[in-house]
Image (cartoon, rainbow, N blue to C red; front, top):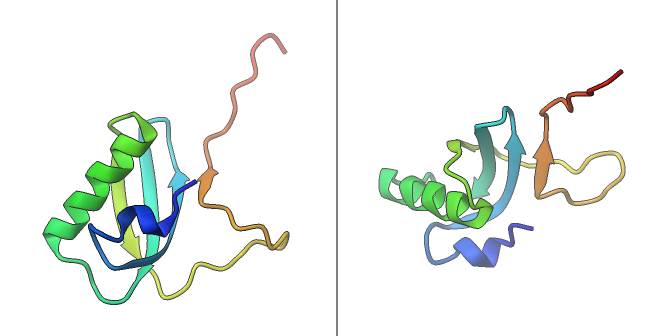
Length: 88
């Protein structure tokens, strides 16, 4: 989980969702009180990489709202990476 309180000392993030796009790339979509400075974005990237334990390429994308899925379950981390099936 990526509780916002973890990042409150780095940037004014209100909500964040981490989406794994490939095996090496993630997208961090977030809402914030204001646009982040370059230093705040760099701090967020470093904190996310440390939390995940891997040096992912991280794209930070500010959005107005992060909608909940139909299940209404809050999903902080989502994977869009297809699972490879071996052996048929």
